Image 1 (tube, helix red, strand yellow):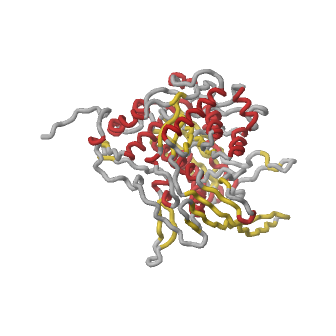
Image 2: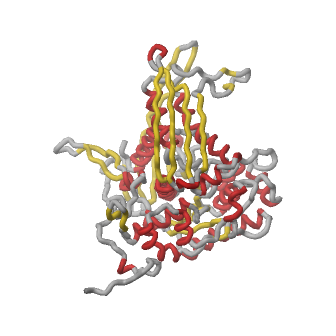
Length: 526
């Protein structure tokens, strides 16, 4: 009989990891095998260049009559083919989302399989739109059957396994112990991936301004950048980004906020309303400069993209102006992974079916650290604002069902107009941990004064839904740093993608269609 090895898993060598299943299709590496043969698409060793005609319409309203004038604008897209060696620096890397992301990437990288009470489980990227969903690109001539490919195959994109991981956290717990604290992943996976997590070490010291997050987080705050000088803090973050890139030989580093939800920052003239005022406020260590805003400014000044994964108003006007000045990529307003994502689908379905939601009541409770932080009123308010606005664009699109806002004397709308009653409740229940329970009631008006009530109960692992979104946003962010465009009708030179004054689209279906349309345009398919 072969000798047995008694091990806790913390010292298990790679040769003993139980990689007995083939790599999951969502994690498989595929060569870039899609080529478009068209006069509109041109390939070189360095770039994919495509021409795209954006068909739209201008609409004029006069005396109650609509005049529609079709328009066609020619654009040219240029995508650099070589994928950047990319790092992901997460603020809050030691939290539930950060440790879950790191552990699952490492599990996929080493193809670590583990035992659950239901059997053997293999790592995968299910839940990622880019890695686990497909898009129709055409039909096969011989059979007429539609051909679908993974979205990640349309353009060269970074593979999640290749991301170099790092970041900051106010807690100094090492990454293997932080994963254990989070209690998200199955024990047998934690046991096997722990040695790899331990090699990530402890997070970089982070910034802690107690006024912006709940007081109950103070007990975790033992890994902090010293002092109260916000200019010094800014320079320290910038130095961390430069050192991380240099140490790992990176071309690009995506800075991603996945830390606690902050309270909303007050927008104060002379403080954060312009780029110069914001930089001066940082030098003066003004109290209304939040940690997330400071990280965003650091990323912008270092020329690295910043993604906000929480609902606070990180992007105060001064941040947006600074990003425009430096042509830096910024984006993000909370991760909509569970209840709110479902709401963006169901509310649109009801309105598009001609049914009028009168009220939407949403309750959820969870027991992870996110729920603990949100149990404080000011932090919950940020989340409430973010969750409550998710149906706004759907209501605005149908003024047959909802009365439009009144127009003020200056020609601007007053308020939102008629809108469903919408209430959001979040409660902290430690016993349920990362398993979030959500209950929604949609109360709607139907034909001739009738009423319809839809009740939904949803139970999910909060971090296991959010983590794939972090991956998708990171991968897309890296891609967008390689894409330029120009309007051929205006004789523009190629410039970075930067649509200004773009309205927020909450509808999941419209978001998906926009993503597909953009990626297809980059290779000349439409």
